[in-house]
Amino acid sequence: MSVHTKSLKNNLILKIVNIFNDNNDKLILHERSHEVLKKLSVVDFVYEIIESNLLDKNFLKREWSIFDIPSLKIFENEKFDLKYNIFLPNKCHSTNNAGYMIHSHLSSVLSSYVFYGHGYHSIIFDRDVKYFNDNYAQLKIKRDFFHSKGDINIIDSYEPHLVFNVSEPTYTLVLWSDDKEDPNVSKSFFDKLINKKSSNTKTKLLRNFYVNENRIKSITDNDFMLFMNKVHNNSLIKNNYHVHAICYFIQSIGYTNFSFLEKICSDSNTPLIWKKWLDKLINKKSINYPVFKNESNFLNGSFTYDDIISIC
Ligand SMILES: [Fe+2]
Image 1 (cartoon, helix red, strand yellow):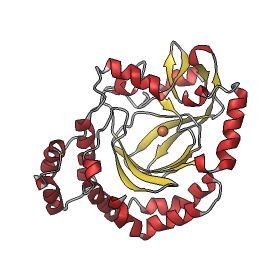
Image 2: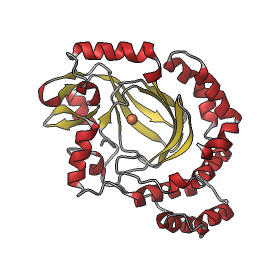
Image 3: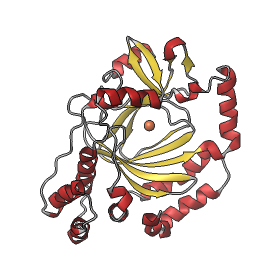
Image 4: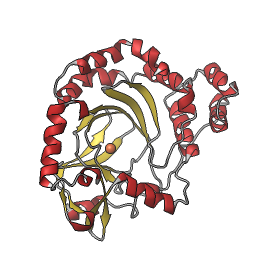
């Protein structure tokens, strides 16, 4: 948390801290935060966050897996956390293709604000998922919309959702809060879920969904990881993609404090992969965004908008 000391002092972060100190319904707290959230995307603030992340040794040493969206930490405490997420186009697929598997964030509530790029098409499904034998499931579309620049969208706890491939680099500011500390919200929902499923607590972990022979199938994080680990020969860590993506972000957002970058780059503790990409920034070499193989995010290959519309 030391890296966030600077941000913590910032009035904007303090405003959100104060909002979340109120014991109210999480959705209300999220809505109250939205005006402040927009202000966290002004460039001077983004530059401050870039620097606080690059000064954080844990951030520089982080091992990024293929499941991680490249991101920068803005702030976290026990009630919420704030991040910039970086969505990059996958050139192998169109914007009609899913960018990631359908998934829910379990008890977390998420606000997402698009502050750079067009945005992305998204579908949010009803939280009341019907499960069948062999982990087949039925999802019902709740919202089908384009999450465009300037919009803030809330994804409620347990709501499965789908993000389609972006047409151009798109950056979002995300606010996560967890309901687990709110006994009214989480217990009532868990009770309902568990009663319905005859105490099958595994159901709530079946939070990832994909298309299998024209049906929706669900899978736990654990089973998905095991499967992908096999497919990728135990090499789910892809640091180069993420460091490349973050340095692309730094350049595209117009950050030019090269003397600061030189300081980070010349530090003997800075990992080589960071030195490689920071060096390109320092030397003003134009960085193209990295292209990721979409299949890395999927169990069964990518699926399309039309697949989902015909099934759900
Ligand atoms: Fe998500």
